[in-house]
Image 1 (cartoon, protein in one colour):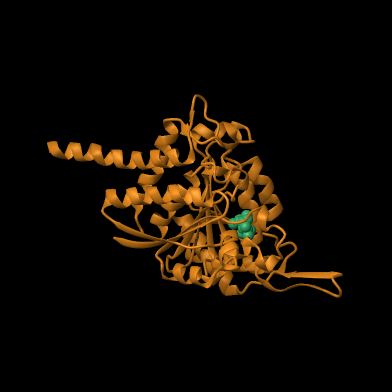
Image 2: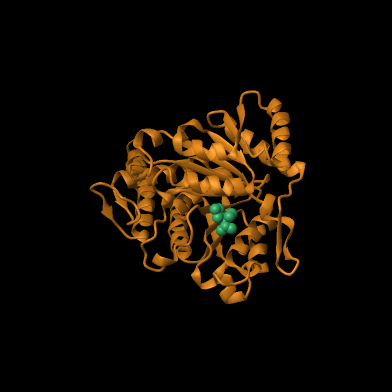
Length: 368
Ligand code: IPM
Ligand code: MN
């Protein structure tokens, strides 16, 4: 297959981690006989510095024409004092909105060898494996008006949703639950918010189309508590934009390794933007210390969700697991008896795992 991928390295450690993931994608292409072509564009602070805006039009155009987008991270102290509309984060919000990437999929699954770093007791966190489906292009993040008024003495943000916006994310969540453990928790604040009451109505309507999925409603405050007292309870969680932002950060630390978590932001036709859940970590940028595994796992999600390449995605995930089993890791992880390597060495080791398997298979095929 031929696929064209846009890389948006962004800021801080973004360029390093996307470079590592690109190398892995090239190895996958070689091994499976695909042609992946790449094009790099600016977003966030890097785009502010070079083009004077966090989201240049040429970046959006390139993404529109691509088959998949891989993003590093945006933001950093250098741009912290800019007004809201000109901040690096605006680039990320803008690309999600302009491309209509309404479904944010954030899987949280621990690696056994890293669970000891979790802030939770081993018996609480062991076996937790959940997926947060967060609505990404509506709600408080985008509702109008948003302004200061009355001489700056009043401020308003707006939580706005159309029924259609709720329907499509709820459908996506039911579909995701169908290919997992078939349990869906819809999280809202229906005891207070009108938008949550409409959210509940939509879930109740849609559930008839997915009789194999068991669904329940949970208030967001209770869900926040349950995530840390009994994370193994959850399979798929679906929720609106702001609740999903908060709950996904909370969930991301369960496994003890934020540097391992990938995410996908997709729309109905399969186009998606893939990025690690972690941020731009400006304190370690440019030192080749950053853990590239979350971005590599995000690239695996691109293969799975945008390109339908299941075997290739499985291959990347098992290569990451093998590298951890070999106890190679970057300094952010604590692995007993492990070897700390640089980010680029770790990414290279993942690539080697993928191509080594080719060699073994090729050798085997000589004898059959
Ligand atoms: C995330 C981030 C973004 C968000 C920020 C950087 C705008 O926190 O992807 O979760 O709030 O969506
Ligand atoms: Mn967030």
